[in-house]
Image (cartoon, rainbow, N blue to C red; front, side, top):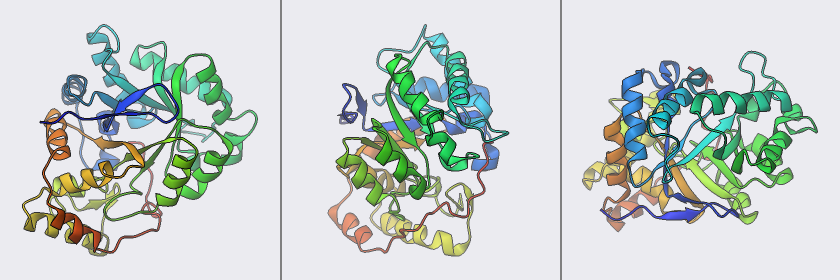
Length: 323
């Protein structure tokens, strides 16, 4: 199997694998995914990521109310610290009860993360989900979490800093006002939806690395639309699933796993430094790497390119739940 390439992370001196593994499911979040993940399964999956050729893992303070970071931290301690080959990305989060996200809350969020992970600093730290806070203006203001994030970088608590959010209209002012090293967008640059494309263009023009998360549209293109009839973390109607069924039909006609096409769609784009794929069991790590190297005929790409795609916000009706 060919090696997964490493890509320079924006303007930093850091390089990251083209594939990153998302760990939100490790937090045991049945409200989001429709299934749970117990401790041993999470530990086994983290070990598989650490031992893979794409040892890049992304988490957040609020995934499963901290359980994701805690479970990653168990494996970090098993290894005697973060292994040299592993790149870890996590996120500052708002107070989940009040929505407050000022500098003090950001500092507390980082302290909680470092305690859970058993680390003194993290390679990559993102500002997370400002659109879900009590006040976006507070986040961006003089005493807000955004400026505190950059202070953390100056203090050596993070090697690189980024913005990880959903709503493009909320993200764009942050990208214009702050020089992030990286940007995470999710569910908005897929075979079915290109809502984030203009934002990606802008980020790249500023020298930021684009990390594209959730290429499987929330899981349906990885698990199969009939087996997992959900779209962007919510139960889906037939109208919502119809575009995914069309994608799936093309792939299956050519004996190509839909997950491979969804993943490589992101990996083929020169604007994308790394694609973040959520996994919830160790077998999915190996499967993801196999999909990354699947030989997909040009005819498949031509047929997929002929399909219409949405440009609206795919999460506009999503009921956001941290569990």
